[in-house]
Amino acid sequence: MKRVLLLVFSWLSVVGAAAQIVRRPIPDKLVVLTFDDGPVTHATFVAPLLKKYGFGGTFFVCEFPPDFADKTRYMSWAQMQQLDKMGFEVASHTLTHKHVNRINKDQLTAELDSLEQRCKTHGIPRPVNFAYPAYDTSPTAFEVLKEKGYDFARTGGNRLYNPKVDHPYLIPSFTTKADNRQQIMDAFQQARNGNILVLTIHGVPDYAHDWVTTPPALFEEYLKYLHDNHYKVIALRDLTRYIDVKAAQQLSLPAN
Image (cartoon, rainbow, N blue to C red; front, side):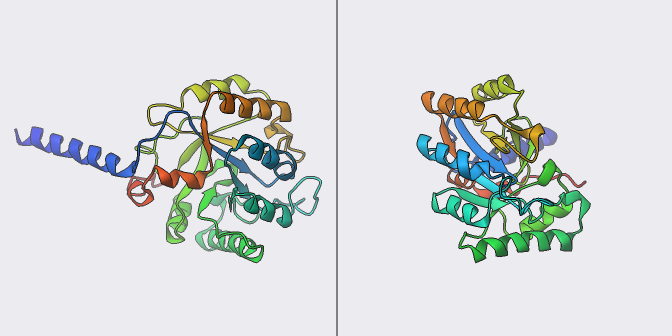
């Protein structure tokens, strides 16, 4: 009997914690658009198209080496500043696209601090959300993000985000590419029952990394589908409308 009561108490505790995480019901057809690496087409093609459809989005920016100075490939800071002025979220991808599992705590802190300082210099609000370069994660990164007060951190994984299960420092996403249209269209149908679809999009097209390019016509097809089928399309920061970040951060994280 005592064992049964203990199991019931544990179950009720889990249910109660999950209820605290979700501050308001998560609607079906909720999609988060995120954009990585700072390619120039985010400014020249993506942002105007998002405005056309009335969609939000988060741009995870960095000074991608070694060709950041090549403005035929990458955005300038003036263009990143314009994204902020247009109402989009500008967030952190480290300063120089460092894989967090290959650097120590001090190095990662310096990367984040430097990106934050660049934002401050250009009048962009301090980033509070993060995307892991190359989707690599590490316990050190979790520690640094928490110490610096970050809310969410996005990775890959090609699955939906369940806020009651997935720690906000391990938000999964689907990556759009030239050859996975059906996978993305199928993922749109899964955005229901409390599951949120997060997309990671690189250049549209990507002149520096063609293996993650998204053709412009395909990207616009996705946006038109979302618009015509009445999806709610937001930036990562907007998840705080639905998720209590402090409660969600009590979920467990992997130790290695």
